[in-house]
Image (tube, rainbow, N blue to C red; front, side, top):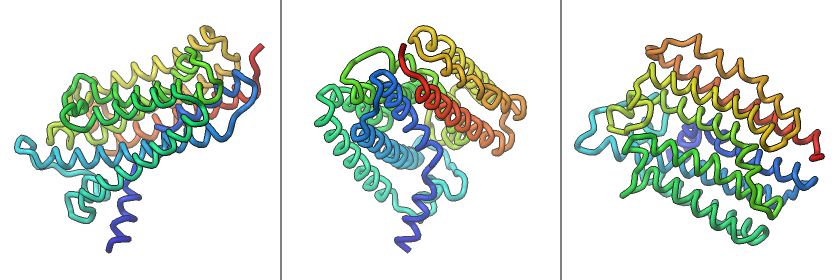
Length: 308
């Protein structure tokens, strides 16, 4: 039964979201390699491992806190899709303490990898890594619990912890230079990561509303949330044009615009009221595919180019 529960817990992890949270780190390493003309594989490995373990831990901690929120006096009875981490806790298949302990283990591994990375690359890694952890903890852990307070605070914490701070720290690990280049060059990828996060929230909108979690999707409602997703999508692709010029990136970087129809086409195919769970699933799938393929095109553009 224990191994079965463990297997179900691993299956309940959002693999696409985990990959999405790691992609800005990969892009930052590629930008650093493009800047100096070579890639340092050891710091890259530790940087990816640090982000990967923290991404897994963040998901588990969020799922644990969501279930605890559903037990509060103000929460109304809520369900989630069968096989989700919320459902596994509610049905008793996976004890909530397992999520908390496994999340703590992953965070420990993340910190250890970050310390090794700092040993190779320098103290700024500790500074940016600590900030990223504080934003992750601040999103879900008391007394802050910003993800439950509304105003987009939880989404902002995720964007900073996984979208912007890893860009700076991983670029520094490759180049030993603090620069605006990774922030500018990685901005389209970070915005598409935000789109993935927002799309995931739409799939749990009703549950979050019932338990009192004030995500942007809950505050705005389905139609306005979809409008906001469209805005984030447009900003992401507009930033591809802007950063290619401002950061003097290779023109091949504009190849990321090729995924625009993939990202935007889904909005014309769904019901704005998200009357079917399939509508939210389509949004999540399209957002991840846009992020994944844009990342691959960006990596290819940097791999075949060198600064003038």
